[in-house]
Amino acid sequence: MSAAAKYTLGRIGLFVVVLLALLPVGMNIFLKLMVALAFSAAASFFLLRGWRDEMAEEMAAAAERRRAEKERLRSALAGDDQPAPTDQPSTTDQPPSDRP
Image (cartoon, rainbow, N blue to C red; front, side, top):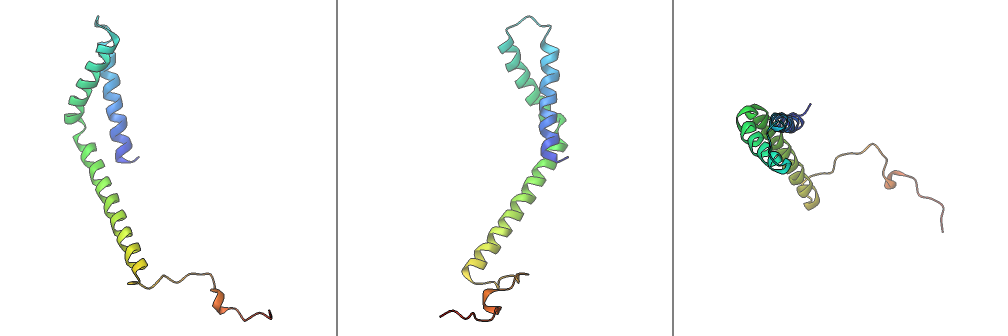
């Protein structure tokens, strides 16, 4: 499971736990939702630090891969790199046809 999925499920889980803890309290449901959101956000800051750091590392690695691929494509379009050979024969390798 990816770090982003673990962190997201952890955040949702914390929200549900806090909301369930607030159910017996006599207050408006919207106030309960807001309090649960605030408390779960604060708790996730401390409790889910490892998953958050892991997710940040994954996102940074993905951004670096995208940046490198973008740079490779830009240099290929500019003519700095030779195109990679393909497995398909080019149209110039075929014998000429007998068309007039």
